[in-house]
Length: 319
Ligand SMILES: *[C@@H]1O[C@H](CO)[C@@H](O)[C@H](O)[C@H]1NC(C)=O
Ligand SMILES: *[C@@H]1O[C@H](CO)[C@@H](O)[C@H](O)[C@H]1NC(C)=O
Ligand SMILES: *[C@@H]1O[C@H](CO)[C@@H](O)[C@H](O)[C@H]1NC(C)=O
Ligand SMILES: *[C@@H]1O[C@H](CO)[C@@H](O)[C@H](O)[C@H]1NC(C)=O
Ligand SMILES: *[C@@H]1O[C@H](CO)[C@@H](O)[C@H](O)[C@H]1NC(C)=O
Ligand SMILES: *[C@@H]1O[C@H](CO)[C@@H](O)[C@H](O)[C@H]1NC(C)=O
Image 1 (tube, rainbow, N blue to C red):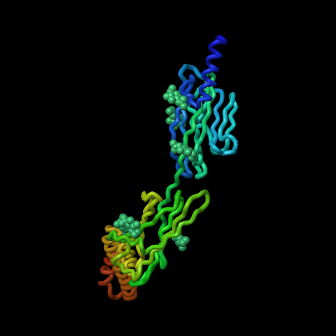
Image 2: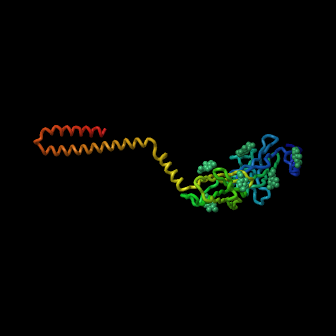
Image 3: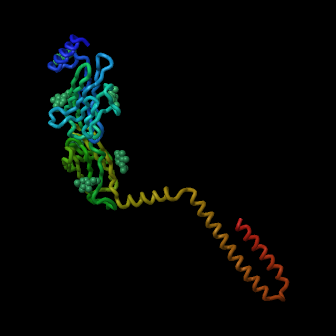
């Protein structure tokens, strides 16, 4: 480089920094004005260095929060990396030839919401940008419970709860029965701010004189803008209905169709075996009785015949 071009570089560089306009240097830093992050998840603030010339090497990258007195979130300077836990280059093995200097927030907090500043110094000039990160948090699928919880009799008052956590601002909970009637006016909502600027909602709705023809109630969680963020349904556990359903379940689940014939055939076999056993005992007794009467020799053959039958019967049993 001649001293004239060096001077030119410097002049342009200086002019641009003063004007707050980096688009006239040999590098540009392109970021969107706003990025969106979700609480508890990873967020990325994407900035890409766009050099006008080829083969550019990055000397310094600094990421910081605008207005925050704290130290830089992420700094790279001449092969040295100085990160803050939770902030890193989005590119897994970033190096000075990689023009993608995007910032990754590994676990986004509500406090990460705001304006960021990325400044890049390369061997052909510097560039700066101030993208915003807008962090939101969504309510989780609500959990429902009731008091009393099970074996509820007809015409008892049942209080149903619908709770949800993790919202970004104070939300709403709407209540509906199985016919779509809106019961929200009869419900009571309590919103509490929890750690990290999040909200938890607990809504209580009492069904007066609940009947088993209306068992299913649905609650919907809406954010501050009225957008649905979660929904759940709950069935009041009435005593009779519950027992009836359990019996049905037993019939259809625990007793498969093939079991009935098996039981019938099984009892038949057991019956036959018992009959055979009795028959065997009787004939054995008869044989003993007959052997004590040697004079009645005509019956001896009958006895032997009985024993043959018996042996055959036993053989067929074991097969
Ligand atoms: C920055 O440069 C661009 C393109 O050259 C120009 O359109 C814009 O007006 C400039 N902005 C300022 C603040 O000088
Ligand atoms: C920059 O890197 C991040 C992380 O690897 C990636 O998600 C993003 O698409 C990259 N941007 C560009 C323009 O390549
Ligand atoms: C970025 O955030 C700053 C400070 O919160 C705000 O003044 C500015 O309007 C925001 N810019 C955009 C594009 O949302
Ligand atoms: C919902 O919140 C209420 C009041 O804080 C509590 O009594 C109830 O047990 C909670 N229910 C569930 C399912 O978390
Ligand atoms: C349900 O009732 C609440 C309170 O009256 C109302 O704000 C909401 O708009 C109603 N929702 C629907 C879907 O009708
Ligand atoms: C209750 O009703 C809702 C909507 O009508 C339905 O999606 C849900 O499956 C029902 N829940 C139960 C437990 O019956």
